[in-house]
Image 1 (cartoon, each protein chain N blue to C red):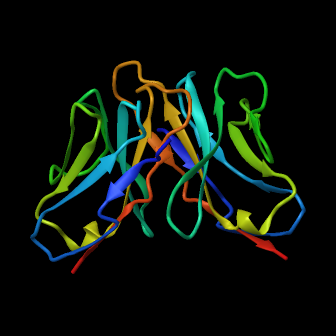
Image 2 (image 1 turned 180 degrees about the vertical axis):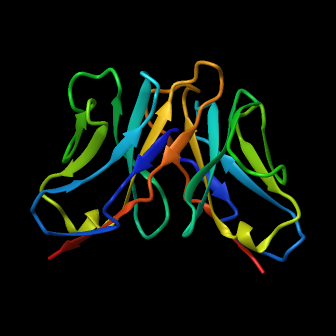
Length: 117
Length: 114
């Protein structure tokens, strides 16, 4: 069954340091997409980064990079040079590309990141 | 370019009532998805609409329904509200149904059922 696991309910990081948020997934499909979203206390989900299952290179978006290890089924988010504004809940998500017309878009339980000054 | 908008932002209803939530996607986006977020269950997919047709549905009872209009705006309806329906309801839009890119989320509607 399709599943996303985020094992870190909460994490602390010092400002300006890098932090890695873990995400493992389980799917039997060959074609899928992995996403990371940030949800500040305001509630709005903000897209951070995307990795396709066939992408050979790790995705990067500014200070965000996705450490994609397909064989291990992990898609960890790395935030470099943490800023106070990075304090938020972070969700890993997976979406299978529809073949039969039905699919699911599922989210992990999230990791709450607190950046310390 | 305007983002995804959701109305209303906050709503208080009583058990047994019904409620309609609205979502306006980003201009040019044809796919609208709905999610329910609760502390206990996390984020759960409700359904997705594309070109006025429901393309996929999550594991929610039939009390949850939706529709999409020709301008891609979408509404979600919950009938016979239960206390457990209290949640943040998020709407997200994307350009394509099978989009390999991201979904853009709205600010959500916080529904409280008393």
